Amino acid sequence: MRKYFGTDGVRGVANVELTCDLAFKLGRAGGYVLGNKYASNKNERIKVIVGKDTRISGDMLEASLTAGLMSAGCDVILAGVIPTPGVAFLTRAEDADLGVVISASHNPAEYNGIKFFNHEGFKLDDDIEKEIEYFIDNPEEIDIEPSGVNVGRKNFLHSAQREYIDFIKEKAGHDLSGLKVVLDCANGASYKIAGPVFEELGAEVIITNAEPDGININEKCGSTHPEGLKKAVVEHGADMGMAYDGDADRLIAVDENGDIVDGDKIMILSAIDLKEKGKLKDDTLVVTVMSNMGLTVAAKNNKINLSTTSVGDRYVLERMREKDYSLGGEQSGHLIFLEHNTTGDGVLSSVVLASIAVEKKEKLSKLASKMEVFPQVLVNTRVDNDKKNSYNDYPEVVEAIEAIEKELLGEGRVLIRPSGTEPLVRVMIEGKEIGQIEKMANELAELISSKLV
Image (cartoon, rainbow, N blue to C red):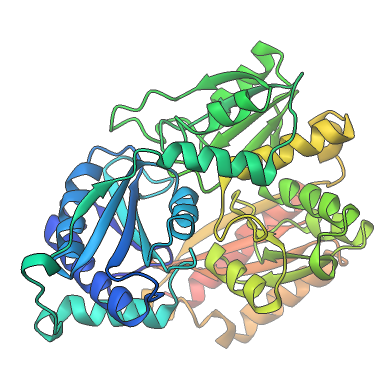
């Protein structure tokens, strides 16, 4: 169990949980562990790329983190406001030893986070994060005290945004002339990236939520709040809309009718396209257990294999790297095109999706109809925190789950997920009839609650 790192870096309310002191210690410990033990050894001095999103606390945490890194002898290159996948790209492109992102992704403005990439642009293994945590708690064991010319320096990469824009255009770009698209930048890190990418590829672009003020990031906008985008697409008569989150590592799309095209649909469309081009390794798409059953049916219809992991893009990426698969992702909109980048990339994914529509000369609604979404019902039920993982120990619960799956006749499923942070068990049931699965989910949640309190 990790003390500071969660599933996606160190996160918390800025200046309360994620303090400047912790940011400094994280920079120093991370610079020591990664720079001195796991660096690429290509550079005479340890070289670190640091990027951030638009949160008001970003400057404060950047200063503390940078001081910690430099105290460990690291030379820091500040990339400024740039999407998380942009830092992963720049870490490779600039031949850096590690990259660091200051962002809390889709969370509200008062939160922030810090996460690391290794010199290949991949997120850290659990064991390395645990090692960094050890040195956060035991700073006296960091056996380097650089001084004089060995203290780290700070520089600025003024070309960071331009380099990343050109990278996306080169990797995923297609002539988008004639396409009209609305982009919702969530007042986040994509606000100077997404517009230029689409415009330079020839599309007509309407940009929304691209005026960050430090506190409006993700506020009623972006991939977690696409209502405004749906309305804007219809009002402007656009062909499609793209919504990113605060650090632009995920994408939720909207078709010309204002209907949501989520991560599952984007994944299956991308998988079909890659397969047709002979680029889908082993005809396999990597998904999580939360992907809709409709994706399973669509994959079967298109002779695409599914490899399923636990929830979390880090687990998707682990499976992809293990088997050298080319595409994977989550329903929430994290899509990893491993041929292009080493992490979820919202802007790149949106260009891929737009290019598919243009190449096939089809409306997004028609393309998205290749997957029928099965209704899902999710019910959270409160339980004793120390019992939330033991629901399978109760025969009544196991029998109830088996009875539901039998009644669904292979056209639905039950998924039970204990919360990682709260005293909750999440009951998700998927099927074709919403009324039926609502009743099943509520009754099962009630039964689990009665046994685990």
